[in-house]
Image (cartoon, rainbow, N blue to C red; front, side, top):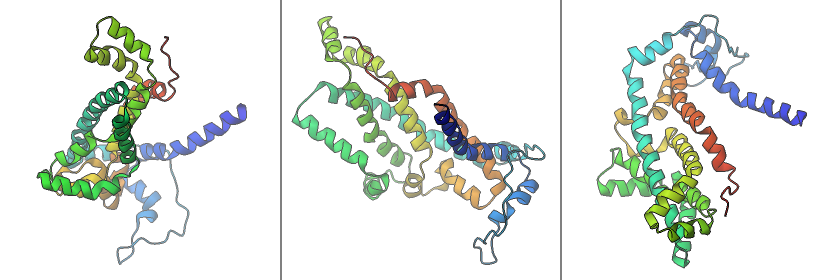
Length: 286
């Protein structure tokens, strides 16, 4: 057990090193950043990357703590905050409405059995197994025909009706004992009350954990905005990070740190529900 704990701690530290390096280096001045990492981002006369022949000095603690990067990002360059709010506008509606539709669809799959139900659910699984890149061209054609190309609806609609949440919530609802539903119906509860008073409270853990996964997934989306949005002013921060990395490299660490904050807050807030949704073992007594 001690060896396993030590090994797990070492692996955890290796995974945390890039995050810690990003946060600490965001307080590094541009001069110090260039002195430590300038060789990595240096380019040749033709504009290409040059070979790094010397060891790079990875510094976790800057010599002088500077807040100049955050001042530039938050106050002197509002374009960064604009992209941040673009990410919020794109992701939050997708997460909320996808969970609402998935809960209703999951309840329908749970309550009504039959061959048609099996075929539809199997189609959901097939769609879920397809990577988004496979359906990107059909999504582009459909959004173009609907006249919503280059609008937020081109991102919202495919995200809201994603089959991922439907699959997770349906599989979770299938673990709810039928006797709970029958007891509620004997007491006079209709379908809506069974859904809101029985199923939703029992599925709180999986709904919260699915919401966390959906938020993280769409917070990091890149392909959808690049293909479906032509106006750079509507791009989320996830797309804009690549431009920062290719230009103002010293600001990239500060922007990346700000970019991490919503994901960390969502994870820390819903960590208990995430564990509950994953490790559910049927805690309903019949």
